[in-house]
Image 1 (tube, rainbow, N blue to C red):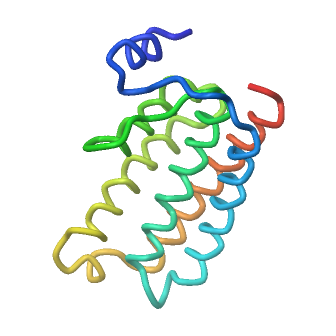
Image 2: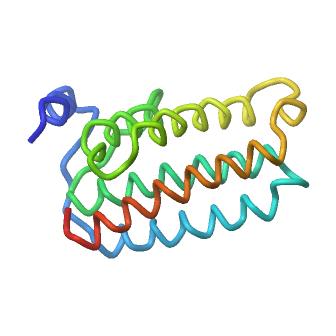
Length: 149
């Protein structure tokens, strides 16, 4: 167990639950559908498309957590904590640049949800690049789960 994981469990920001590969598989499938939806919405609804990219990444990471009997406790910072888990526990599967970009997508999602004039700041090209990042992350996590890691 990594130091980060030990600390997260001790601080109760993560909690132990029963491992659930079925739920993990469902989340991976959801993540893949979200990426497809984001690509379809890239031109017409950029803010929803960015949210879909973020959700795809979050659900894939949550799938890995679930398969390993872990869950992020809800509340403020839960999405950031989910990415922190990926940086700590999945960095051997996911490229560092994709993890950095995932954090940018998390911030873009916050802009899309809560920011002013988000649709003027996010364009289709940005959505499609975010969908590519999400797809690489989801595929990496799906491969890791298939290998039992």
